[in-house]
Length: 441
Image (cartoon, rainbow, N blue to C red; front, side, top):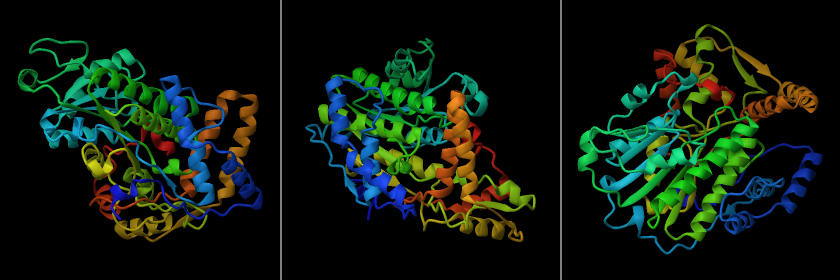
């Protein structure tokens, strides 16, 4: 089945989960009381903006209900009157399509910017003045990273700052705000006939407040500013979400689902607005954390027997290509798009076997019972009742447990294989693959 066709569904049948009768009962209760995504969309339309997170989640609860019951939840595309307008107009072309990328200096954002430039789009990259892991990159570094793209520096949580990304480029020799553009482009580039916004924004830590602030509030702000800036035209919004929102147990997952509901509501209310929600499985770099450990002759650490959390991860380059496809392919319009890498999903035990073979090392394993993580989360939870700032510590523990136990599987796409990635890392190291604040993932 093609990825674009599968996109008509929010996820698929969830992986088998072994739960106690009590846990199954709690899941059934949650499923019967969950609100439907349509209710979330209606609430958004009534307010005319993105509302604060309600105590009982909306789109997230519906997705949880679908996961609990093992049924696929179909997302019907909104009725839209402008299917042939904007980025889908017959005369639209990359050269006349403005693409604005937020989260441009993140791990995936960098590749997304370069892929759109490679395809000939008029690209604007929105970045922080100090970006990269630990804020190591200066404005000059970022500009050098993105030849062929206009770079605008600002604060994604400030809507006035975000609006500068949609302003016309400055005339040659002038500097307007914090925008940088090539002088020749400023005089020869035709005015855009269509606008695509790509959001690669994501919480750097997965903390509760940061997830709400970035995965939902800042991203929703970008959407609203983009719609205002392109009126009376339209905008196509590509959201980088995550496949794990199909079973939402964590703060960042609920925040992403709220944003997905906001996009759906906007498309239903505005025939000139469309979206594509891209839900990748896992990135190669998230599986490479133990390479240096094994090279040093140490054991491979895995939870349980190593058969949990299988995934078909994909490379950053393949994901960037898929996102660029989602910017213009009609089959991916107003759709949720789960996507994984090529080949069959692999378990941690199979990843370890692959690595030991590549490194020529004798296999050694350290098996950690999942109960150890449960105990740690319990202790942190008890402390958090007395010391509220520790709630993020509890959330980090839950994130670790989630990624150690849940499958991340989606329709395969791309060409880059995990084995080749491991071989490259074994030979060249993890230069450029640093996790930074995202190490908890």
